[in-house]
Image (cartoon, rainbow, N blue to C red; front, side, top):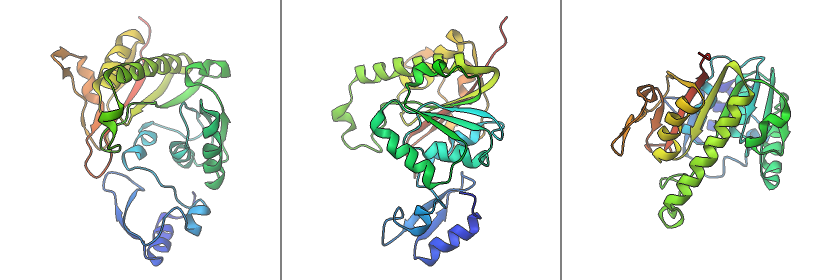
Amino acid sequence: MNSDLDTVVSRLESLGIMLEKIPFLQDGYWIQKTKFSVGATAEYLLGLYSIQEAAAQIPATLFTELKNRIVLDSCASPGGKTVHLANLMSNTGVIFALEIKERKMFALTNQLERCHVKNSAVYNLDAREASKLNIKFDCALLDVPCSGNPTIDREWFNKRTSEDIHRNARRQRQILTEAVKVTKDDGEIVYATCSLEPEENEFNIDWAITALNLKVEPIYCHGQKGLTNIFGKQLDPTIKNCKRIWPENTQGFFVCKLKKQAAS
């Protein structure tokens, strides 16, 4: 993961893998053409690169500073964002990576080992119980479980109900609430979903502004402004600082950065 980017790109292109630079990412490339799985190259097995959806590479880049920080990765498996965090941190500080499902722990730890991540501690722990670690974090990445969207699941409309969406929204609020408890007063929280449902995105952030005393920080990344008027309901105007990433050459995504406000 510390190899020179140009060298890795050259090695892949020499194998016949055609790449295209993703304009809204510093280190991301789309795979345009390949005759074999890019997860089966020696370069991949050596941890020189990872495979991750384009929009999913945005959240880890939104923190102001990561090096030497104490970071919470609340829903870590399969580890793509954990690896990205470690790379941005240059393997400094420490990442506490949580995964609620034991069966997913192998994929997570295998990913970290493959990519030579040295600054992570992995826990089989529900993000809603992060306070059990008795640690205050500088940064918290909440890539929360969500309903997904039809752009990545053709059976989405056959599998999802409105109650599923509301149930996910409730769980997301619980994760947000716990993250506020364990984050330092000057810490940053990045909230992300691969869902386009307002209940799991803007409505949750509107709730968090009031219930958790959080401030929505401006972020500068790919995407359009968060929606502030949905279903006839006017939301907090600062929600425009969030980003909605519509499915165009990437999956649908929502992301925002939150900070605690000083108690009045």
